[in-house]
Image 1 (tube, rainbow, N blue to C red):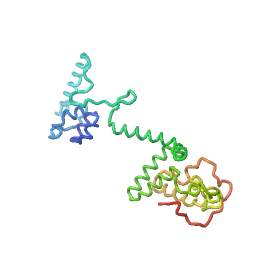
Image 2: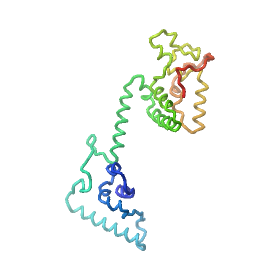
Image 3: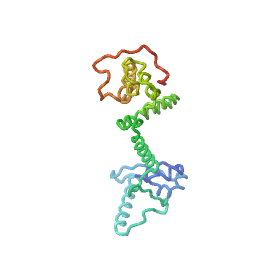
Image 4: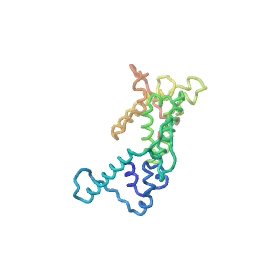
Length: 253
């Protein structure tokens, strides 16, 4: 099947050819493929021998069985044939099959995730919600590129790594009073954890969920979802809200 799939693609670039699963036969038939002398057609097996295609299919089955029996009576043959590049990739005593670039990308992604998890603050949410973070990253990247708003992608990176310029982060070395949230009257430090549950942003939380349900996008990562499984700091009581506009420290895009 790998050989049929490789040949049926026709002429391919050198980069795709070297990564093709059936590149031995692809190299062997390279000139014929370029001249369009090879045509792949699927013929159902065991349907009779009336048409020329069915007769050819039976002949191919007979040849395959003949050489299968011949191969059982002879010694082992070289792993690499003459039309294949003498290159084998191994990882932890296992041969890498298929596209090596996909495997290398997967390993690089795994390594970066391991490094990210070692960061106590920046990797806190990724450690708890790795699948949701990566899925939402794909959505944000798609939306930001389609709309041409690169700041949306940067905002997501800063948000997921808890790098947004909150009062607590800006005034880290100042007095505790300057670290308090200026959107509500709860009197707690304005950290990113608080902003995800701040009573002054309830309307935004609801709007995010409504927008997600309208467009059929999972809202596993919204302004309020990270702490859905925790005791809310506003549970059991209502917090007063300041009538203040959003400050420039929250660059919503």
